[in-house]
Image (cartoon, rainbow, N blue to C red; front, side, top):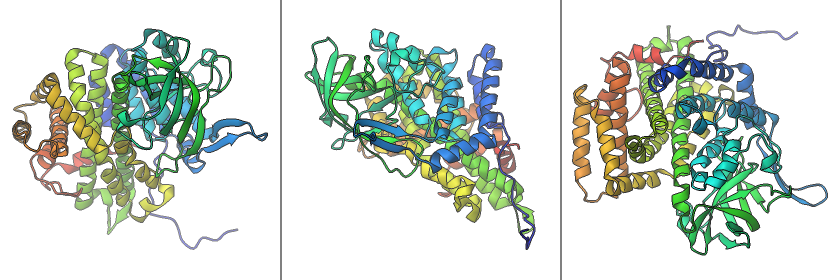
Length: 544
């Protein structure tokens, strides 16, 4: 029998057996604020069920397993036939199946679907972020397909299904389907107009043969892909099915899987097309216009994913400090640690509040809300995803050396944290997109100013920040070099206005003081000591 040299004390219990949704006060408040009252009971039940599953030890173990056993590429079978398949650990399929069943691909066909899905996305990210990639692309493919009513009628019921069918077979035989996308190439990256993949028309109208490559193609075991290629009249969007109608495999040659920093449970591949059958989506030469709504939807998912990672990191940090003692007191009760935790909690709540506001704009669908999304989505994508990494790293530091150990779960969050800033257009792409919206679409700026104007007069620091922002926007000299500065200010003012309207006074006060009023430092934990920091931390604590 093993002998023990000492009792184990002063270690916090695992953060398991709790409702990830129900204990997130900022998230639950946002859902109740934006969802029609007639949908609330049903939504609460669904989200709490998902939250309890997310907080269970079993589902958390699935997330660990999916990352400890990453996908493996099989280009050929034992006989030498090309198969181009990716093998996943069973935990991956369990996670993906549960996410699809929770409605993560069904927002377009459910009442209040975008708010409900956004909340579920934020919750499910906290279990394992990689499986959200195929679900995000599947969700985002719907508006692109709707440019072709016949394609939408054929594919939309499969993509919005709440059934996960992992088998590779003709889509007409499946109860549900997943989509991926392939836009970037080796030579172009975000400059998709530099793509060289060619599309040659076939005899049947609307069908083509593709030759070329894609440098990043995530979720290569999906049932279909939206890709960009050069048709005779220019860059065009195409649907590439993985399996053809007769049951044969389309030419979809997987060259290798990317060895990524994080997001390791999800397969990202390089793919070659060589006589690959494809169907045109939209008009020739309008590929970017066709796929732009898909890009906007995946950018919002980047905001949601970053918000989810921040929330889980802050929950782990507050939970640890609630139980851990040092120098005769709980860490959470020590003034300096409380300042750090409160600062992290502010960033997390601001991200969640902004993300759910944008989801609600999708549900509304009105002209004003669409205009707001045009400027607010790239703004939020730029800022929230950039704030994710420093938040997660600081949260890991709250656990001390324990946060640097894999078993804590924080290193996986740290590795995942830069992803949403890079994918779907990195920082400069977002900032320049904001500039285009400001310069070409005055209705977008008007919608933004009307939104933040709803908070005018409620906080003098917010009022001052709005005034400074207008001055910044009026100065066009060197505007491209100032694009990041302008986008950051747009994001902070929008977050501040939402918190002043909807968050508890102590949260709004601390945010406006530190983010808009200049009374805060460059590192976390530099909030004014006169604020009600204890209430901010308590609001962020996950109740066990």
